[in-house]
Length: 231
Picture 1 (cartoon, one colour):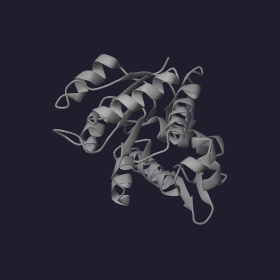
Picture 2 (picture 1 turned 180 degrees about the vertical axis):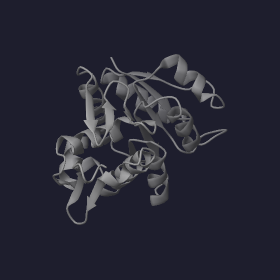
Picture 3 (picture 1 turned 135 degrees about the vertical axis):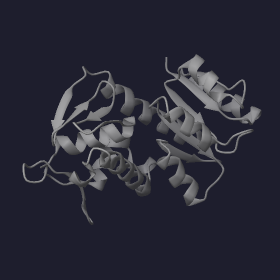
């Protein structure tokens, strides 16, 4: 049974979501102290976090930063705020998806299932080490390392990188990436993919590898691996 941490201060909505998710065999936990969400996170060790933006004490963006500083657990934002900058901010801070209130419960379930399937189906495979442009990609701890440094990726970022490397030197279309990642393009925006790829590229810049993820305008993305390109 997957453990979900639902960070939502609206008690009525929390109880409704918990009841519905429990019917789907999820183990749902809430927050006991909105001034110290990390304590609940550490105690529960959830498989997925669902977080509102507008919360007492500190907002959801703050807690997303704090969680991301110590964990790559998938995070879904659930908020009534509908400004594009809120959606972009949630992705840039490490969120995996954004669900706007009011929402249809079937959409919430679909996003939860897709995220858990994406994160834990492939992570349950035997860990593998992959080489790319003089770096080592480690599935076991979601890291990329070379002589310059080591970086940690989120599950989404690692999955994007793995897909591109599996098709290295070939263009992977945006539509293909969306289908690989979310398994149902109806539940993801094109902008979400852009934010995830840009965030991955910025992290790879620390290893001087960001330039080897090329954007092919109007087509998609390509991971380059040639001796001349990776020197």
